[in-house]
Image 1 (cartoon, rainbow, N blue to C red):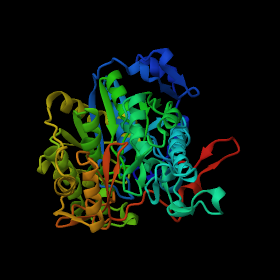
Image 2 (spheres, helix red, strand yellow):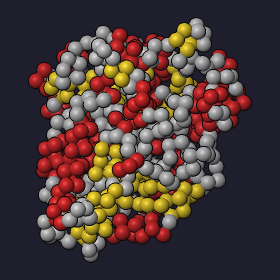
Image 3 (cartoon, rainbow, N blue to C red):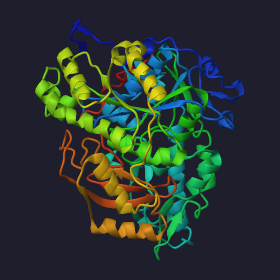
Image 4 (cartoon, one colour):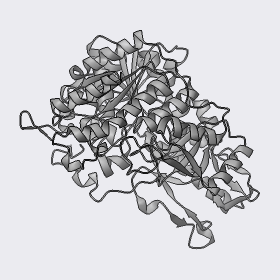
Length: 564
């Protein structure tokens, strides 16, 4: 990217990250007061924190949730803003920790090239975090596939539980975008090779194991939740669990270290827990409960984020994670960019570098609906952060600020991408003001006791702005089954396109008068929520025509290039 004001080529994210003089992670841990005995080192700049450190400590921090408008290919900079805000809070003298999710190899090699922030607001070591990091995702994949192996082995060895191979719901997983694995047939080649059946893979971050890891509060809680995972049904339609297969203990052993939060730092040396990372569409789109809880026990301010737009990530953070973990955000930041709002106003990606107030005006209702949801549905203090790009004009910035203020929406300009923590100081001061002076009245979108259909409808009407839901006959039967099995009190996790408030990705801006079609309803009993599938949602993405992997390489010095 070129700065239009100076006409200079901007450094890439990886170039900026490589220039950073990182502190040894022992220093970062010491700044937080973490006992040396509780720090497990993964090289000089990464560590896991033993869970014993957090035992018997009370939460003391203010929780700040960062979310965003409906995402577009133009980018919103949610993670960049989260990191820059944390650095900004540190710059104004606050004791702060960022709590962020881990990137997935699939999107890294497929679409984005990296997901550790951007510009001068990044977590480091950026290359490690974007690639194998501390091996958590491998452990999740291994635990997932152990369960799959034990399931198929049980059938091979006599099928004592009477599992109907036509009713197996558990899928294998791999941490890579690979559409070829969505639907497969395995067990071919005769009796020694298993039982032939239709099968498939999910990407690791869409696995229920990821959600279980992220929502568990201790090693015992993890094992209990793993044992509840439903892998399929018997010939007489009784659920079969990981506990029935006696797999939970071994799965817990594989996940024992993965459960410990990872400690790293920002470019400016602010501590950051980077741990867990389920997709917003499938789970709750943010870091683990353990990382958030641990951060609240070690710092006065905790900056965390929720995946995709506020209708997906923030909704799940608030209605699922907060419900389960007893969390209540003290303030919420909604991130928006001029570029993304112009796309919501109908411009193509190639046209975003040119000033266009008309398109910006058409796109701004998307931002306003998200801000309204936070304030009026969830009743939380909110500020809009305009994440400035070098190509944005003053007229465009002032237009958004004016529209927000017209409607009483709190708004602050953020320049963290270009200026790091300094560019986040104004946002940091406003966040502190919200936390100290404004008291929210946090309210869930629906109640535990509401019927499943009413929970779904509540989210559609209150958060998406739709008129209601249409439930397919198949989904109606599935809801009846879940009610009969005693799962009706669980929260709903709605999987929907991230590109629209509706289930149609082409409906940009703030559409009205639409209904959401519920086509499939299934339970993630281990994670403790009901997954509601709408539209054309894939749990195994494919690579684009030009994967980011084409640009990633290693030079003669052994340095990775092209990773953002």
